[in-house]
Picture (tube, rainbow, N blue to C red):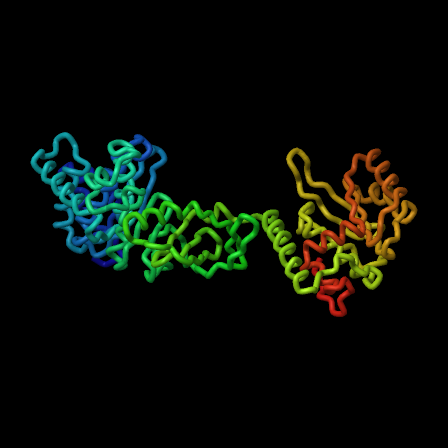
Length: 497
């Protein structure tokens, strides 16, 4: 048939083939579609029962259908579908066949035993169920074409037997009665169907994989890891911070949850597949969602690593603690970083830019809404920097106006040097801040506090001591403006604001 005049693929349910009248009409439609059809096989237990064994039986039947029709098709793909109106889960096989007669006959046979009606032939029903039982007895040691379906069956089967028949305290002998030659099942792992495709042992659990070293892990992740697009893995840089280990790839950082690998290591040890773990290294995906631990001759794939991604506040804390460690090493070398800074050698313009960098980093303000108002000494109306605070629970963001005053070292900034009320009223600010390279006189504190109380505005103070402590903990910012002895840098990298 000319493909240009073919109709769309026919959508059919396996149960359609249990009714002779429907079969003939369906066969004609499939012929008109060039042998292309979507075959739906129900998974009726999912969402309707708590029994993993019943769910395993559904996956086994769906897998048996796929494996049975595979030799009769020129192409077979599949996907897990859900019909919301009837709350029905089902497997949809997308297939094409050039020889429809044996395919339709096989579907009629399968319908009698997989999705049968009351009027189906009992002998055929028992024959199909016997074949399904024989097929099941070969799992997981036979190769299949639908790997995820086979693994879903096995994982639900192991979980169901554990809950319903074996129990938590059963020894290896009991487990071996249910799963002969599968000692890993006692630990919640199955021998994955990926093993037969890639030629090396692969184990799956409900949350992770354990893969023999040397197998194409990127290919496995793309094909069976539920990922969209290409996966890129890079060697993770390891950072020890207090009692926390962090893996990073320069894009994201994740806390290493060693507990995620404990069950897998125990399974390999007790089944004789791992003697001493030895050294371990880690690889991480570009988005931090997958962490791979290389231990011995095995790759441990943790799919939940993304849940331990470090946020901005955590990263800042790690950097601060690492900075303290670096400073300790500098002390050992006799090259300590001077906390005090020579503010006299810094221009007003550079001081205002330093203040912008501090506000961006401190975590109290929206980094995308910090604006430096022109150059130093420009007609800015008393607004050197405008920033918006980050909203907090029950408190919205507020507009802050900052005045930056570079004064001599250890000098004090008094109330007469700063205009507050006119600036706050003119520009509708909800907060006012002062940043100075000296100390803050009591007259300025009193002045701002009185105005803040009368107008219900917030305030923020950055004096010489607070700025120097902050720069000591954020050495990358300090290094833009000062050298290790606290003197202004001769060359200065321009910031963007």
